[in-house]
Length: 417
Ligand code: ATP
Ligand code: MG
Image (cartoon, rainbow, N blue to C red; front, side, top):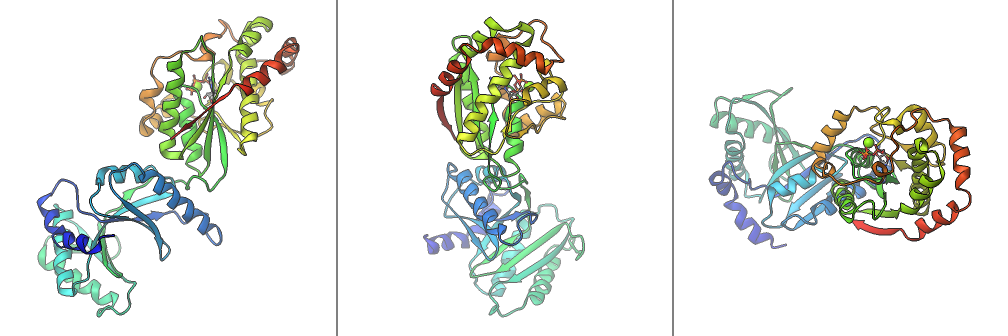
């Protein structure tokens, strides 16, 4: 791991810190804070292992070499040498399960006098505005250290007060909690960058997202993945009515969502023949609902085949004719798996806000045709009657099973990561 070289670099590390003020800080590690809820007892291992796995995945394309590891009930990222700080933090901020990311300065133990100097330099650098209250919180992993935690707190507190008279101690609600951990090396940290929250993907099974090229479905996938659920996706396209470019846009969206959820296996279903057949046989005002029902059935087929425990859509009550309560009931009727609709109560603007936050919005609004908009009726039913819909579907009896099987057999699988 080139420890000595690294320490040699570190010795000048705080000098670098000072020189590079306002630029990338010389933090050598990150302490990861994660929520405690739901990870008691035997679940804790599963939670931590999934967290470590997702962190490694998130860091795999970041410039630098990282060691992600568990130690004493905590999770750390150690940077092995030079790395891109901004990119590292951005990547960790996308890992569900992390509530806080603390950048750590790692110091070689060169005695307490040197530690005093380093702590002073740390505060000088990290807090240009000294008008703050603080508290030193020492922890000794290494009990043989000559001072105990209380003594370290008092001594280092004194050093900071002497060096920066504007700063004051507040042991209850300090602006700055300066953590000093005495391990083999000494860890200094005080900043907490907020994480994505949620639970590590993989701790709550897997679900099948119906992913269109719109704004809503990527957001829906993100929201379910946030609760620890891995994703697969199904996209229905209708060549030549929908273009290759429309499909690429969906692949791009899946890749953007995969930055949070981990790799997504995308099933691309050729839906043209089913759509044309419905168009030919069924009342046009019922087209969308009947199409939706077939989409759900096919997505559910791939869901079950791939051990998914539910379906996910970007539906929101009343958004369009196919999303009234009656329409949702008619669509839902064909599903045997639970259907999760995380944006069901969101207004469009609220969905857009999430899309902007997760960076899918710009891709979603690219103007490519969708298979549903092409076959849409002028006056779709807004209150479909389920019995009537089922009756209309009987007109499809002759060929639908064959077309359904053909759609499944010709489905293309694309790994999106
Ligand atoms: P989005 O809802 O993603 O913005 P949209 O508004 O074009 O796209 P709707 O017509 O609102 O889509 O469809 C509601 C939901 O049905 C979508 O959120 C998505 O889950 C699913 N869906 C619609 N079209 C497709 C498609 N072509 N492929 C896969 N799923 C689809
Ligand atoms: Mg929509």
